[in-house]
Image 1 (cartoon, rainbow, N blue to C red):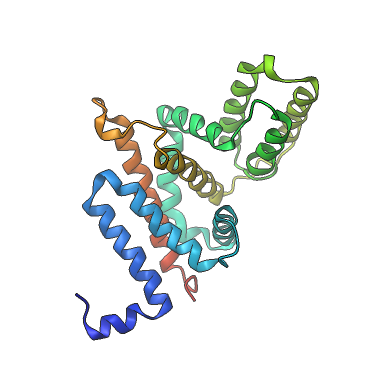
Image 2: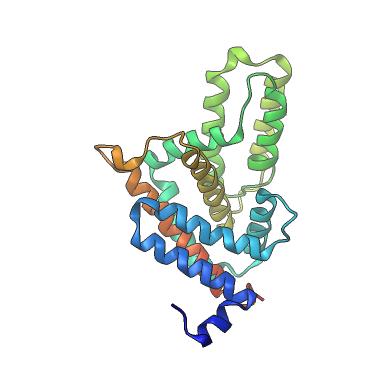
Length: 235
């Protein structure tokens, strides 16, 4: 299947990573039903390569996101533009918000601990862009108010403190915040889909979610290509 020269390149560690990435991108092009899954595998190969293996998956993803934050924003210009389009779509965001909430793993027994985790991951200086903060804040407010009977006084006080912190944050937009939001959203969505918690999209008569999945896959593919072509990333 491969020539000898190609085999020598593949069995180089860096070449092996690139080959797996490219194979998964090709598979994504060939099979639309598994497009997002295959593109995520390409992204997975990147964060496994870039980070030590004894770290958790979330720690490895965070390392990639930290790298992007310190990189040249111009290199990721097209990817950020496409992700902004997805986030700006009101219908898509309503579904994203649900997945986002589900991904935080709120429990019935320990709301305070889960709210702390929410604060740490999504609120505490994670997103400086005012548009993103407004959207996530609206989603969070809806969840809290719709479950108000389940919250004790301590938890409600924590929520009030969160609102104050949010209002005091900087209004300076950071383009890479959009990448961070998008990656974590796709991570949560993929986990739900992988574990069979959503209907298979090809069984739906009005297949709007399937189109959205392709949008997510296309944007994630752009991010993967941006990373492998960024100077020094695979060194």
